[in-house]
Image (tube, rainbow, N blue to C red; front, top):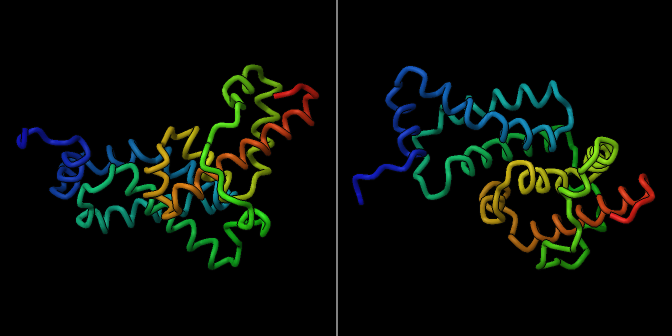
Length: 191
């Protein structure tokens, strides 16, 4: 079984060997993650485009450091997260916008009975949901995007953000509560 190669390792090796099209394939496979993650953090499309370019430049420069200890997607996500975080720090924009979020006890169970997919069933509700997501604090919006839009696991999000899994679960729980409350308020229907 040692001769079976993991697709991530094959792609990394191809990029490191400067094979034609390899880096473009890497960018193509991971640009959506990079864009979603950075845009959710910085909220400015122009900044997000520039930071995505910076991310892939950094990935290209540092790919030789990738050891395969986590998925390549998580490693690239970590690079994007770090670049966006540094951008926010330079602009003195806090990642955690509400001080009361940090004081809330951590919730270990992500599920609260709220079915996010069912809440998006029609266009009007979907529009309200996207507005509610945009109104979430920066970190909750980012974690929610990674979990639902990018379909990443809690351990993958831990790898990307460096946050404890309990903290991630707590942010997911709180963001879902906020979304449910926002949808109930805007649509008048219990979500």
